[in-house]
Image (cartoon, rainbow, N blue to C red; front, top):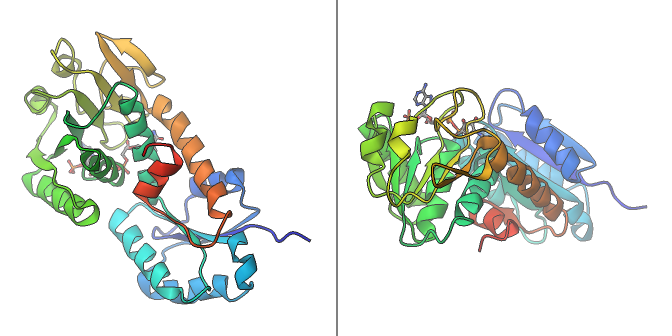
Length: 286
Ligand SMILES: NC(=O)c1ccc[n+]([C@@H]2O[C@H](COP(=O)([O-])OP(=O)(O)OC[C@H]3O[C@@H](n4cnc5c(N)ncnc54)[C@H](OP(=O)(O)O)[C@@H]3O)[C@@H](O)[C@H]2O)c1
């Protein structure tokens, strides 16, 4: 009898994400074992519970998904899970705190349909959140000149440091205190990605329209008001004022496909680590 595919879901937030549980089931997990408020010190025993129950040749039927709203916490849980493996006793892992990797990969893939990103100036507004940090890192790794904003100088600097640490690439930290500064920040940009919180408009219409050189804009905020004024949430390559636009649902459709494809991939073998770059590969971005 074929073994059931089991996903151990370790979430740093108090309530394990319902979204991540549902996508896991839709992506091919037969059962999802979810744990909330998981901290690093709890990871070893949870992982051992997963790797000691099936023999090495069957371990590809077990995998681990790490989520939660806090990106840094997710990275710590991922490191702790990897440390708990030894010899052939390991299972595949995926990190997607707050949809960070899958959403960032989908947004970058959409922007790339508007042309090469290498050598282009890309502004990522609110790059301090999980999605923005991953997107800024992936774009910089692909050779873009990335401007990473936050409302505060300290926030932008901390995000740039975290991106440098994780991706080994530099981005330019820029403070954008509010939307009135968006036009100045967009000076010279070819691409714009808004990664701001839900229901916050960071880029007013007159900041991005009529701007020479701007090729494409993408927004991951689906909650009105949208992050980029003047686009539609359903835009999926629509032309708006001569610029190619992607709204959050346009990005989200691809995000869902990538997320489910990653879950399915986890059960193909027992030694995958699906973090930003590997997830980009699953999406065909490399
Ligand atoms: N389309 C999809 O498939 C999908 C999937 C997952 C997430 N999302 C969306 O992607 C976006 C980013 O997600 P996330 O988890 O990375 O975001 P987040 O952590 O909630 O917020 C990102 C950044 O937005 C800024 N921000 C938050 N509230 C603000 C406010 N009231 N005014 C101005 N700036 C504010 C903050 O930056 P500073 O404090 O540094 O300024 C924050 O670090 C969200 O809108 C989320 O809903 C979309």
